[in-house]
Image (cartoon, rainbow over all chains, first blue to last red; front, side):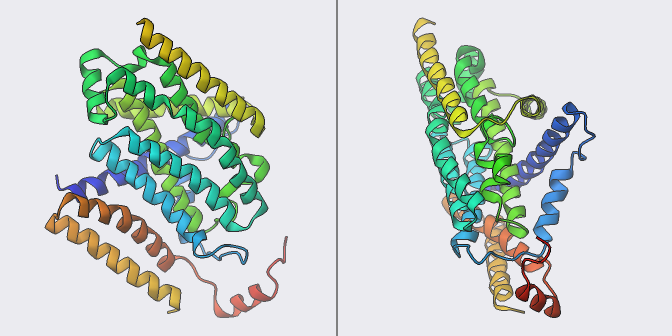
Length: 287
Length: 71
């Protein structure tokens, strides 16, 4: 297939699947809390509504940075789609994309001029201290497979079986990272309810829709990386089942657990990271 | 059309033309990747800026004068 067509198709799939999964997420959270909840396509409808809504830009916003930062979020996650499903490139680039995502959270908050955005901006820096070590999961994958290339990792698993069984603590670390990106989970301090919508508070109307499109691609990509890196070569149906399973699982966590304050959230994530890194290295040496 | 509308239209047309160019002529991979990374986000943003709802002229004046009514 033509590379451009391949990229467009994968971006479209990532957007549609991601937005339906985020809709499912809200539905499951609502059902667990004995509420009827919105329809599964609500996220998609919400996003489209915002996309065509009349928008105005706050006087306090740092223009054009305020708009540019929303574009950067989409740029990085489209890059992730290209590095992931399209070209199966290096996990190192995914790590870079994740690091830039933290910068986007930080700068989107600070560019708006909103106090809630600024609090979220501080929390983004704070949480990076915990989430970046969690992403060190990639080092463990490298130590196990001898490569950072996604295609190499898939081939390794085709021969040796899923990495999920070989380095389960690394998989758990990555799962904690996904949890930190979901809404209203104990670790999602940058978008906690106490600061309204965090760094997105002053991005409303068109820009909110734009951010939501990027976030649906992000959700799809985080799950795709997990399934590809820890389960290896699986069919598209298995991808869908896996993505739905993880989304439902995280929705349960979100619905039944409190929002931690930033200190507790970061400390808990650092503890997970230490247990994951030390435990995985010990397992690699023992097994 | 206001200045934002004109700029958005130009950006949208350029980004769509670049995407169509990459689809039809299949240039080198790095060019296609560059077009995807820049062209897709710009086309989505500029399309949004073009089609988003706009306040009517008389409403616009009211909003500017009393921006915090109802809070």
